[in-house]
Length: 450
Image 1: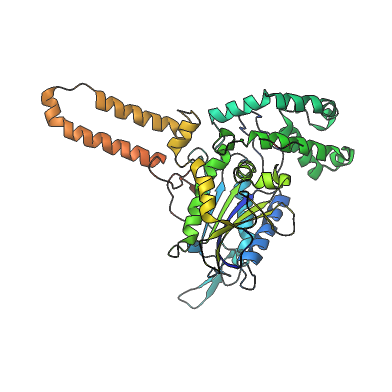
Image 2: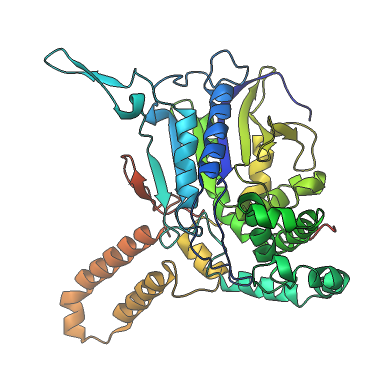
């Protein structure tokens, strides 16, 4: 199916954070150290926000979303969420800068008082855009890989695979040359992402390091890191555990599509700010990396994916257009995906992605074989208490008086626990750090060679 003559209905944006300082993550569990965003990272996100504004919020743009406010931020039209874990606030801070570019300060952000005076918001009419900060301890949708025991097993199996051992042997001589440039980090193929990150950060921020680093080393290390991370965060099977990062985020994408095509729903733009990992899985699950091998790797800082929902003027159901802008690229590029050419019917996207989606906390706990972390402990306890209450011995007389009441209590407690933990819904438990809004319910939503 080729690109269509159509009307843009709305867009789902997935954005990586901007430049940050040094960072280390365990190569098996991917638990991470603290870091912080840099002014460069803020600027990258601000410029990206300005670009997205010119594309989707400018009535003169062919990609303008009809009805969207072009001046003041309209909270009823946009939903924004940002990962609050992993990189210690870097993703959230990046998202704030992104919104500054999308909805810049304006003197129209003012209020007229009873005494006739007009007050403009601080900083030249700065617009305070609400962002839902997603705490990974309460909502697994943006970091589905953390504390996932089956994913850790998948990673260990990859490290022990013949493919990995072969790559380790092929790269061994090159890795020996990297020790002076790795900042004391173990220079092994297993630790390749951390070696790359150290070299990349210092090549940007340390002039002495940048001058001393041999010209080809960073590109070679990045190629190894791309191979490493793509194999860790993907799986040959769409439902395979290697894709857990994409499986966890996909329900929120599908829900956003559903809202965009609903004419009664005013939300036509959804923005999700994340780290790079879910994009690796999504690119694999949708066949984007298979059709475009250059995307089978770590995306640059301030990269953006745009799933545009469009209605063909010729009729028929809505279609999805996949656009991607890698970091400092000037514009979006449209890519083929799902083994098709051009726009893909929304129904086909749903059929391909929905079966692998991790829709609830309970689903995630089961898939990841976790009974204690990230809400799984409370879920396990609720189930145990429900069974204990149901199986507790009671006399026949007592049963006559208490049976009905006990049943009501057990059912009510179990129902409350399940709703709290997301077993009965597809929402988001998201902690709002910036702006106002109601908390939502819990929503969770091989390998190319070098």
